[in-house]
Amino acid sequence: MAFFSWQFVLFLAVSLAVYYIVPVRFQWIVLLVSSAWYYVVGGGLKACIYVLVTVVTTYAGAVLMDNMQRKVDEKLKAKGENAPKLSREEKKQLKAAGQKKKKRVLVLVLLINFGILIVLKYGNFITTNMNGLFEDLHLSGRLPEVSFLIPLGLSFYTFQTMGYLIDVYRGKYGAERNPAHMALFTTYFPSVLQGPINRFDDLGTQLFEPHTFDDLQFREGLLRMLWGLFKKMVIAERAIIIVNEIFGNFETSRYAGFTMVVGILLYGVQLYADFAGGMDIIFGASQMFGIQLKENFRQPYMARSISEFWQRWHISLGNWMKDYVFYPIALSKPFAKMQKTLKKNVNPYFGKVFPAFLASFMVFVLVGIWHGANWKFVYYGLYQATFVSTETLFEKPYADMRRFFRIREEAVGWKLFQMIRTLTILSIGRYVDVVPDMAHVIRALKATFSTFNPWIFFDGSLYEMGVDERNFHLMILTILLMAVVDVINERGQTVRGVIARQQFPLRWIVYLAAVAAVAVFGMYGPGFNMSSFIYAQF
Image (tube, rainbow, N blue to C red; front, side, top):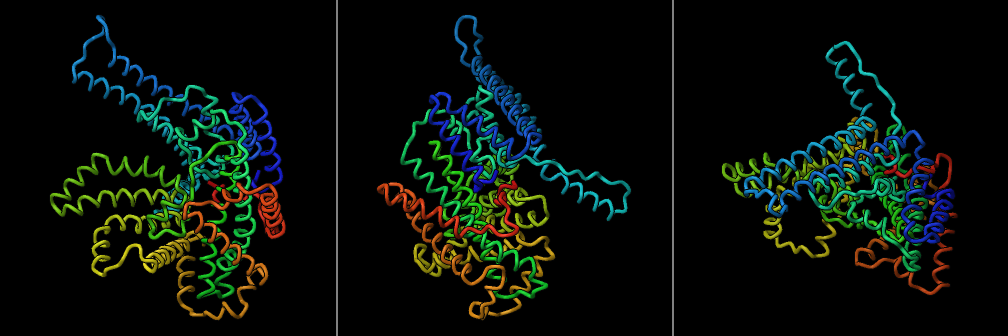
């Protein structure tokens, strides 16, 4: 059930009405029933078995670890005549033994759930490549290739629940004792399809708190949903027509030079308007329930480096990787030993930054793989990892170079140069994403840099790629509108917040204008897919 379908609008309206009618102590049950219904309708009953396994194993594993920790704490805090007096060494051994038992449970549940993710999402990719390797080595035998039913939001709810499980293991908070609460946290319908990846100490507390109807919050949520629909239907769906034409036919139609540049820039626009538009719908719907999700985008194209871009783009994924992958690797004993050795035998600065460089590189390779079961995403991860990790490695030389050339960090010209440089690096990397394989990437890049044809901006050829002149100009205007809104948001204000506080007539003029803009200017032509949010496939 796509977020921009009339079925979803009706479903959301009914859910909201029931949510605010029932006594507040039953509100979470309304969310649970709505989420279950949404999941069954959207993913099918068979797919529910996977999410059920995740709910059961996560709940049981967390409770078991929590019980183990409680027993250890009781022994450590035991008082009275019959209580054994433990020495410092005995307390240390007791804690270590308890942590070891918890770790076994943690590893088992992680293996089950990440195993499901790997088999369902990457199983065919692995077997196909293994069979190819067998053929290259002239070995007999072939692994069976099976098409699996992939449940809605598999990567998102797996990362979300496993983050919760690791937090319980670390003692950040106790285990949730109500299995129905865990089911709601796992399947909360606004965010189950394409994120964000929520934390239990943030979302988990809000889901079960009472929420009275807040008119201002409701208005802001509605405006944000409309803005998300506008970005998706008016901007992204126009941009993708041109993108598909250019990169789908660049060899047969001999597209080259600035035509390819326009295509890759519009692909970046389409990605942002699609993904951020979906997030706006999710955040807006959630806000109407009185639940505030952590922001997943923060004006990413204003980033001045690749590292900063990833701190602004899909923020919840970056934070998850940082907390549960980067720090465990960077602070591990092998990396600590590596740091000590490099400081002693090579250079103190190099010894300090190289382990962080290596850990960062490994993380971004995983980020690339997370995006899909295809070698091109491995290369995409390697590309991003190279730039992000080298920023860490050469941070001091870069700073020395800026001081040598007397570059002022806050100078407007320098900021603009950094943003253009970052966008250029990102755009080149996206060739890997937009075409099917690396052979096409090389040919597409060659076509881009082999021709100088600035006249395409004046001869009307851009209006012959599936979008006529009127629609092309409308797309450019709406992209500029999106950019203006981002600039305002970057300054700490929100356009929707200002509009939501206006008097009734002005608010309704904006509501109706937004609905009319989506209805009139939205793209619903042949080939339009009502479930085509890009990140919904994850």
